[in-house]
Length: 166
Image (tube, rainbow, N blue to C red; front, side):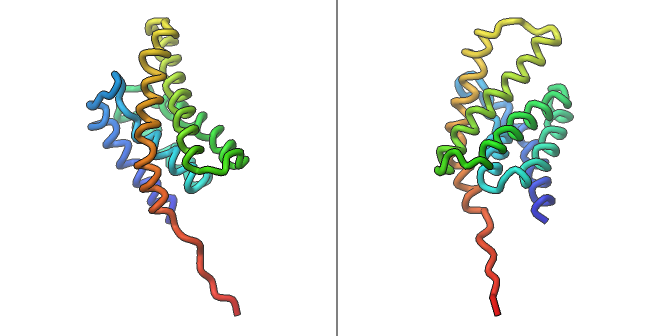
């Protein structure tokens, strides 16, 4: 049931991301609420729960948004899968610090892969301008958006199972 709920939540949020959130610009970039949600879900629930959501979100955003479908899925899947392994290593014991660091790293990787795809298909080759104009502001905006999303995810986390022993 958790996969069904996660897939539905990812689908709905991908629709909202592609249709509405892209219209708002902070520091010159649109916040990526979907990436922030997936990173928060990764920290709270683990890699097994977030992988189906990444697939649904990447496919939905690729088809509804104006980006290449496979590139969006790849840009979401690779960084979050690798960062999920970092989460499983338990390098940091503070989940708040972990979600902030993972959101910044996932955003930088996501934006870098999208910009590399744009450059490979005939876009302007300006890595320094992309770094200062897109990647760093997007990471700052998404990290600033992370605490409220993480708080909601943390409150929605299921409690420990209560079993009676006889």
